Every structure is written in structure tokens, then in C-alpha cells.
Amino acid sequence: MTRIGVFGWGIVAPRSPNIDAFEANLDGAESWLSPFNGFGPDNFLVGMPEFDFGVYRPWIDQRFKPNRFPQLVDKMDLPAKYAIGGFIQALSQNPGIEEELQRLGTAAHVYMGTGLGNVDTLYDASLKLYRAQRRWHRFWADPSRNAALTLYLEDPSSMATDGASIPLDPAEAPDGSRQDAEDTWWAFWAERSTDLQEFLREFAAIESLSVEGEVEAGKRRLMREKRRRQSRLIKEWGSPEPPWSQVSANVIWNIQNTPAAQISMLGGITGLSFAPVAACSTFGVALKLAMDAIRRGEAKAVVVGATDPPPHPLIVGAFYGGRVIAADGQVSKPLGGLRGTHVAGGSAVWIVGDHDYMVARGFKPCGLEPLGVGVSSDADHIITPSREGPTNAIQGALSEAGVGPEEIASWDLHATATPGDFKEVETLRAVMSERVLVTARKGTFGHGMSAGGGWELTAQYLGYDRKKLFPTPLSPGELNSEIATVHEKFVFDSDCEAPEGPVGKLSMGIGGVNACVVSRPW
Image (cartoon, rainbow, N blue to C red; front, side, top):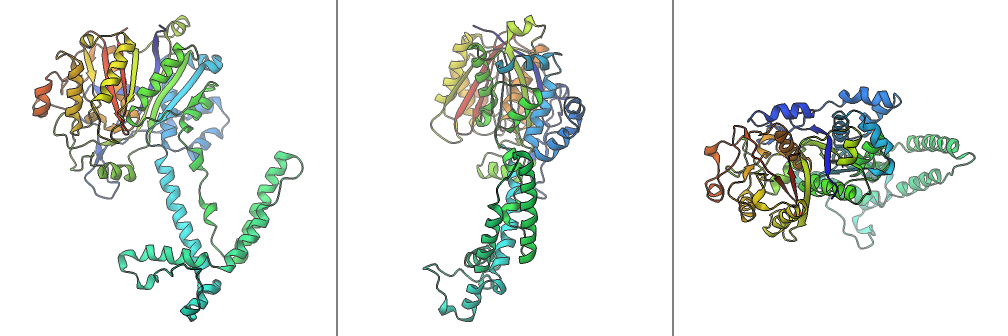
């Protein structure tokens, strides 16, 4: 079977703007989490990525026209920028690999996933749209330009509403629901404005203009002419800008496959690029897809990875609503008090390839050798892991790797500092022996929805490169007593020698998707 190697990697994580900082920080046992305060003062800790996109400008300016970097700054949200940063870092471990990815043509792929996508862009665009829609409805619902409302105010019994109920007058709404009542009232009456109907007819006439003459030049002329006429129409009516014109195109420039597409464009990679999305198992799933493609002969090298936005109030609040997040201002450590996880953002990017092919061209592999990836679904619960699903993924990885469970020397848990940690350790011990040395790292950098599995795998690979297991924030006295009755061998707040033999890492994602990676030292 074709052997796979990792030939480059890059990281954006809390306190770690790059792979070198990430490795240096792993030597310490302290947590990298920091206060959130996204709700104003609050009690949440998060993993806020340390990142400066400007660091990558020289690389981009060297390869593209001067306007390319400003375009990326203006149009791309942070998950895409994190992925770009991780990719540029990954090229640096093996000089010449950038040119090889281009030379490979369609035999070089990009599988860059995400867990949460463009939350910031959607949130900002939604707020702007809501405010624009509110101004718009209020304008056309004003009695001075709304004959239906004027008639109703003069004589409520004369209003024909086509069976619709007249909404509550905002003036009569309780203080706590005044804004909602205004939105409903204004939308109701704007829909019945004959002035708005006339405005829309005039607007449609402008939009009906077509391209004439040479297509490209004609398109530019048409866009300018439409905008000029629309501006004049808005000025004549004295109306606010239509709400549909207030939505940024960045909403579609930052869909799920954008990070993969940007890497393909910036790297000149012409093979398949797409976004696998598997929640917390995204990195493992991307790695499996890459290994399978290489072993089928469809690719010689694949850029794989995952990227998440920085912690956002929507996500922190949703995790809190799901009762899986710590909210007391203290670090919740996996395998300890089980008070909940901490949201984090950033990226993890690897370049994996056909080992013999890449080595023959002078490239050196990093870290460990990935042997097999097992994937499965629980088919049970949206967030609570089953025992059967992860077990199937573990057994699938062991089978593909050709490794017996008794051979496994070290194991990295998904472990989110929730009660699920206990079941995960029980599941592990149902397959593995008591000698396996276990790590759990979300108390260090938090829970990156998709990138977290990549950080954990990279930490495992970096450690074995140095024949050690990096410490975790958990001290022996903090180990949960119930978990201690199931298994005793954990890596605590001191590093230790890496035991010889294959290693494993399990990720369990929302929706019950599991990915398990088994690897070995070269």
C-alpha cells in the first residue's frame, strides 16, 4: 500500500501565529485561553487566535499584482485568511514544494474544511440588512406616502385588509416589545404602499436594461448607467437605499469552499479543491480523503486542513445554550471537573503526499507517518457521543493501519471537559490496553470546531519528532476520580518520554461524525 508522508504544516492558534510559536508554546503546561468579553463583561474564556495577515503580504506581493493583497483584506473573512497563512507556512518546510504542487497539475488537490464558516461576515451582513430593511419599511409606511395607512387612521372601519389582521400599533406595545411591534407594523403598511409599488416599477425598468455592443466594455457601461439612474431615482423619491443594495457580496465570496479555493488560486494548484465539513472531525476526514485519493492514484499531493473563525458571541452563546461550555472564568480542563469546553479559532494546514514520490524529489517528511484513518457516524444523537460510533472509527483506523490495539503506545482524546470524557475513556479502554499513555489538550488551546483536531494531531506529531509528549494543563490531583478508576496513565503538567510504538487520535464531531487517525514514527 502507498505510504503517506506529511511534507509541510502551518498553524494559526491561540498564542500561536505560526507553527514555530505553536511548538514552542507546547513546551509549557499553562493554558493559552484568555477572557472573551464579547458580551461586554462576561465569564467566558476562549482561545483567541494570534494572527496578523500583513505578515504574509511579501509572499503575496512577490507573486501577484499589487491589488491582490488589498482585495484579500477587503473581501476575505478570517477563516480564509487563517487558511492562507497556514498554507504559506506549510510551504516553508520543504523548499520547492510550491513549484511541485503547480507542476503536478490536476494530481495536486486541496481539501480545506471548516466547522463554523463565515460567522462574522454573515453576522455583520445580517445586522446591516436588518437595519436597512427597518429604515426601508419605516419610510414607505409613513402616512405621508402611504394612502392605505392614511385612510385607516382616518377611519379604521374603512380599511380593506384582504382578510389580514391589523397588527398591534407600536404606540400600544409594551416597552420590551416596542421594536418588534414597529417592525411588524411598518412591514404590514409598506406592503400596501402604492408609492412603493410605483418606485419598484421604475426600478424594474432600470434593471431591464441589457448589455449592448462588445460584451466586456458594454457590461461596464451598463453597470455605471444602472447605478447612475438608480441613484437619481432614489434622490427623486427621497428614499433610503433599498435593503437589497446594502448586502455585501462578501457573503458569497466567503462560502464554505472559499478557503480551499483561495489556497488553490494563491498556490496555482489546479486539481480538485473543495471543503469537507464534518464538525470537530473535519481535519481527520480531510486527511482520510487525501490519503484515499493518493492511494487510488488520483493525487500525488494534497493540501489538507481546517479553519475556524475567532470566537464570536453567536457561537459562544450557542455553545452555552447547548450546555457544553464553561462560564465561570476558570480554565475547564479535560478529564478534570468536566465543567465544559472553551471555544477557539484558527487553522491547521498540512501538505501530505505519496511518500516515495515526494522523497524521490528531495522532500523530507515531518513528524509521524499517518497509517490509517477510520470514520463513522453514531446515527444516534446530535451532540452526545455513542459508544458504538467512536469504537467503529477506532477499529477502522487500526484495521487500515494494520496495527493491533495492543501495539498502541499513546492516544490523544477528543476530550471536551464535559461528562462525555468519561464515556470516551471507557470506550478507549474497551479496545486498548492499560499501558496506553493518554493525552487531552483542549485545556491548552480550547476547542477549535474543525481546526482543533488538526492542532491536536500536529502536537502529537511534533512531540514524537522530539521523542516526547508535551505537557497538558491537568495536574494529577485534578484527574476526575471516576475516570481514574477506568484508566490511570495520562500525561499531566510535565512532559514525558514518548513511548515507542504506533499512536492514535480520536475526534468526535457534532452530529455524531467520528474520525480516528493511527500513525507511527518513521
